[in-house]
Length: 302
Ligand code: SF4
Ligand code: SF4
Image 1: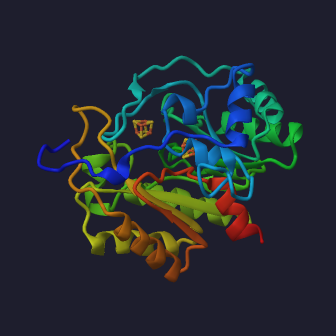
Image 2 (image 1 turned 135 degrees about the vertical axis):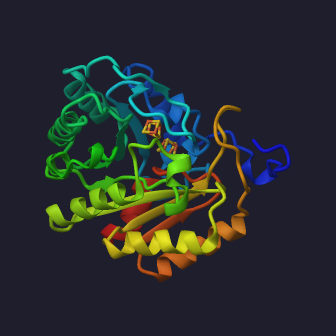
């Protein structure tokens, strides 16, 4: 981190508690499921797993968790991300879709976010593997809500269609930052236009498809640029937006330019909802899948 920018108190994490959280944590150990929530020590785990507005679990009870498919090694190297990289990661495990779906179905979570590293080495970028997992999920537990947070599939719109038509409930792809900072922040194979075209296609190729994206703040973006990115997302019908603080994972990664205040995050939530997003989750510790199930049910189902 830039030594002149001091980490503020509002980024301190709270210890998770709550009844549903405790139940999910206990049953997880038998299932061999690697959740991003646990592996990445996500600060939101109490709120997400309880399906509650607070760590005490007083929410709607729609528990959310995130699972990583297709291994832990990415073919890209974005400058904000600490995931391992390699040109040739291990091939996908063909039993993963079925086994993962079976384990999640027996686990008791209500809304599952499936995500993955980028797999530019695979002909379809891994979209078939995602689609198989979604189908198996819906077979084993028809009432589970499934969100896929995917790569851009190198802009391959066929790959996007395969996944969108698999029966998922929400298609998510993150633009990560404003247009000007794309080259600095993301791997050169990613890009603003390519990400927008993926989100646009996802919206158009299935009627009623709900789409979602995310922007990290604190990378040096200006307010006008954030507004422009939000307008670009609304122009292609993106329904849900999340905004969170960028945190430097290691000293080798991009430095934090600014710690955006909680008040400013609230401003962005109001602003985003005023320009037509169904909801905006915005806060220093908000991540793409933050309370996703609870917020989805509150804002898009009722
Ligand atoms: Fe898990 Fe995502 Fe919630 Fe973090 S924000 S606890 S990774 S579902
Ligand atoms: Fe990390 Fe995704 Fe970039 Fe890979 S593509 S380095 S997983 S942010």
